[in-house]
Image 1 (tube, rainbow, N blue to C red):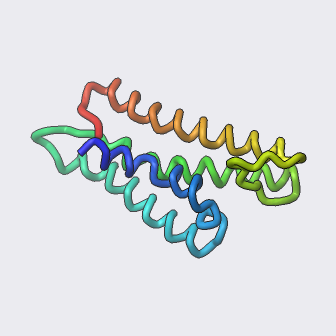
Image 2: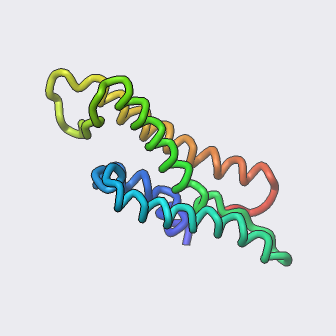
Length: 129
């Protein structure tokens, strides 16, 4: 069951890695945002209804946080370079240093935030998923 929580937490990071165009296109981004928002609201509401066994769900909160991080970093990159960031996975072309830094920072910060949410949930003393 833990693999399902991990998959839910890393869903936006996975989309960014394998199909970044879905996060850039407005229509698919709206769908991803709606799903991430529904997961976030679920993570907020579920503990309210589970009175006998309180559980926090940081894995359901992370997709919205990761999406927000991507959109913020993308906006800053576009403002700085006046173009979309390019996926540089296994692309060693010259002139893509800023794109490499974008990718390294996004995936590092996104993964860090995912584990930070889990650690914060663990500090409350309540079981987290």
